[in-house]
Image (cartoon, rainbow, N blue to C red; front, side):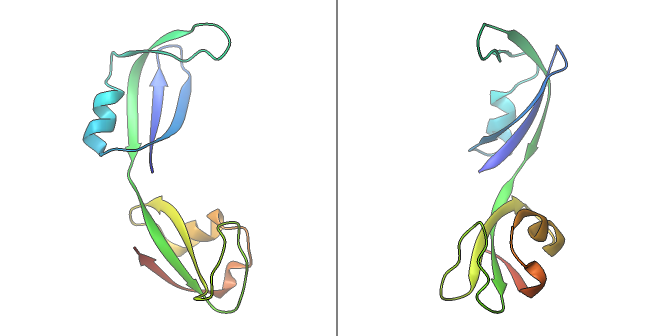
Length: 108
């Protein structure tokens, strides 16, 4: 899943997960479009900017049988979704286990 960071005319910034290409996401959150961002009462706001982050899945291979929040399997791998070009340091920040054992980061 990709993410869109949308800034509205009242200054609110909302980041949300969304499927689609960068083009279709930017088309959906087109500058000048109006959205109801209210949760209890209507709050109609105009989009002033939209930043899209395209995510891909990485397989994280590690030594040992460390368990992480993303789960683990017999091949000692976990799958995490991060922006294209993510570093092992970014994976370490995302996972909640002893990450010193990461041995490989593979795009899947």
